[in-house]
Image (cartoon, rainbow, N blue to C red; front, side, top):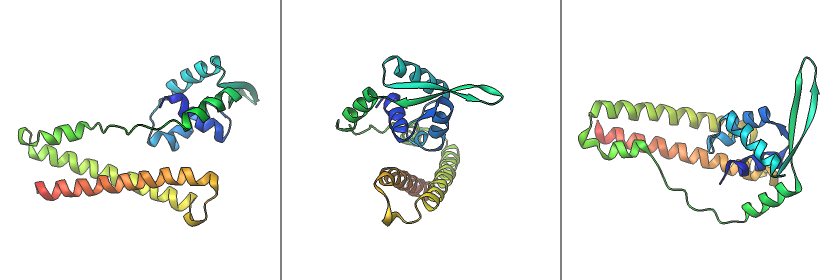
Length: 176
């Protein structure tokens, strides 16, 4: 997937300025597809040149006009084509796993400290995801069609963090 596709998904949901898109990435999409604000602006410019998005200026009181982007017909066509293309399984890349593999060459206390730190991060992210689920999807058995995809992604995040916690707990048990 290219960043362009993540932006098209976001703009298909609702038009936004570059700043608003960057905030959406920080709040949701960024949990599973990282992009800096600078990358988003750069890609938006290229997407506008490619006619996948269009923009218009919106006047603001006391501030410069802001550029609001919307998906075009060509952008919807690209998004539709991408959505029906089979998704390859993402390869797991983990620096932590490589370090753990070298446990016999490492300082066990340093590894334990790293595992504890990772566990805290998994616990904090899980709490954040569960809070979002409770706030935005209090009745997951009554989701609208447009809520189902985001809820399933959130569930995937919850399950991944639960698995991360379980793995850290297993490592701590084995090394303690």
